Length: 434
Ligand code: PGA
Ligand code: ZN
Image (cartoon, rainbow, N blue to C red; front, side, top):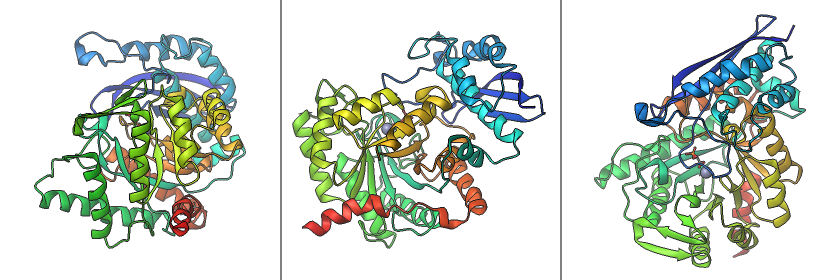
């Protein structure tokens, strides 16, 4: 039987050394599921919030209240429910806190419980999680194209540079394996270049090199040099992807680039990004404008939506309703899917499907605070999302996800790798127009 018989909460620790919530569920059949909540640093204002204890101990980051909510509220509510009814379970969890941001229950409590039930359901059926997800949501599984960070910035690197993620994608690779091989060469080439300039200073929160640059554009130039040093021609097999995370330095349509000591209005900032799109092989840009700047997002999409993927992260917070509005407003053309922004598996899948229905890309994503939990690798494969973003190419909380994809590749076969040709074709198309 697939009925949930026990739910246990536990405090564990994430990749930044902060407390986080782990949940374990058991089913009547003996099946077991476990999941851990991740945590963001550049969080969207409209995403579900983590419940933290506050106060001075553990810098206010403790999660004892959230763990208590798992044991005292979530457990009695979902024990006795069938684990295969993921939506029923998620609705029961959310009924405990009808507030939109789940402030009293805690998104960290709800997401760990929801994902643990998903794992329990898969175990009950004796299926790999990715296969169970594909089955549950009627999706065709595939191996995603990774977006991998080379330099970290923004809130993940003490705001040393303003832009948050300088990433590569390898749309010209023929397998997931090959993406990782090429990324390894680029990652270490970038480190060698930084070392030669005396600018090597460790790594940022997601494992990308610490950005000891004098301008944001220097990071882009260095990324180009690293791609070349790795023996690749930028814009051929390897392209660039940026997460601007503009909400971190933009407010009311004004964008303050602290590193360069200048502030740009919405139009001037869009113009700057436009120059970068012209000058570098950029195929994807996330949160180019602030989460409060819907008008800017619309203007940016109108100007560049035919040649780059424009992803809403903080702007859409994995919320089907906000995606619907953005589709109508023609703001963005893709969505980042973070389960903990939505607070439950069902809500995250609703968001993914809302985007998917209108032909938008969906990028399943980790948070900057991560753990050994690899659920998102399975979600990306099971939903057939096509893209996966988990940070850089070091640190085990990141590598665990890439490595899990390699294991899934062995089960699925390399043929189901989603090449990025369609995505990169936008860039190549633009180049050919010239
Ligand atoms: P976060 O950032 O996990 O720190 O919120 C990740 C991202 O912006 O994609
Ligand atoms: Zn982002």
